[in-house]
Each structure stands twice: as C-alpha cells, then as structure tokens.
Length: 217
Image 1: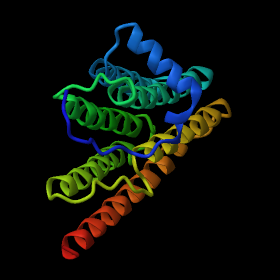
Image 2: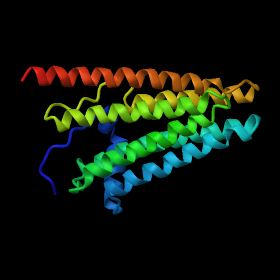
Image 3: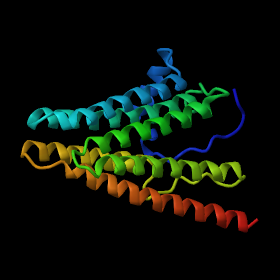
Image 4: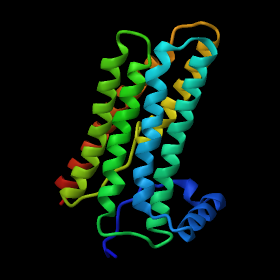
C-alpha cells in the first residue's frame, strides 16, 4: 500500500450514506477499485454506442438510444465515485492505482464526447466531438502538469469532468425530447459547444493557478 496522499476532487456525494454503504458492500463482495475504474470504460463504450446509432434511428427509438446514452454516462460517473471510495475509504488502494484512476477517465472522455459528435446528425458534429474530447484531455493534462511540477493539482472548472458529463447528460435528454417531436438533434451540438468552450476556459484557469504558485515560490 502506498503512503503518498493522492489529490482528490471534492465530491459531496462521497458523504452520502447510500454511497458509503454501496462502497462498503462492493468491498465486502471482493470488488476492487482498479476493476471499477476499468468498468467505467465499459459504460463509456455503451454511451458512445448509443450515440453512434442515433443517426440511423427515428422517433421513439432515437429517443431511447439517447436516454440510454445518458444513463450510461451517469453509470460511468458512479464508477468514478466508487473506485476512489474503495481505494481510500475502504482501504483497497494499490501501488498502480493512480494509473487506473486517470487513464480510464481519459479513454472514457474521448469515447463519450466523440460518440456524441457522431450522434449529432449534423455535419459539424464529428469535428466538434473531437475538439471537445481534445479539450477535455487538455484540462486533465494541465491538472497533472501541476502535480508534476510540485504544486497543487487543481480540479477547478467551469468544465471539469463532472460538469462535462452533466452538460452532456442534459443535452442527451434534451435531444431525446427533440426526437419525439421530429426536431433536429441540435441539442447535442449545443452541449458540445458548451463543453468545448468551458474546457478551454478550465485549462486556462488551471494554468494560471499553476503559474501563480510557481511564481510565488
């Protein structure tokens, strides 16, 4: 077991009784944090698959695919919550836990955001999805860069991972409603634009904070 303190995002849900009991139950059942981290990729793949089939569907079927994609996104976030709780609160942290904590997140972000881009049913969708994915990875890179330089790993937004996934969940549900009324799937486009702009702003804010800490030394 490693002795270093791993920087963690402040998440109020960790204090919820249901989350504590679920993490405890999973730990007793033999599930370990690294496995839960990998499971988040599976849910991300499910969300991406839901988005990818959207252009080939109509009406209620399209709406169902979008709702399932939104549900898979939330399951991905639940995995992100529980892997940390299993590692820290339940004491199952491993020496390579940092790898499992961060790498699956980057893979999941790319799969979900790129999938959403291809699910927009508009020509601008795919490049927008790729740009949003790149910007999301950039925010994580800047955070980890701060840690590598010996200063704080900043989790500030306005578009950190939970905010990105919340935004895309709302956009997916809005697109599902649009599908039921025969409207175009521009809700996903709006969501991706917000995520892209917010991620760029987040990377900039984090970079500024790192620079300030370095200059204050």
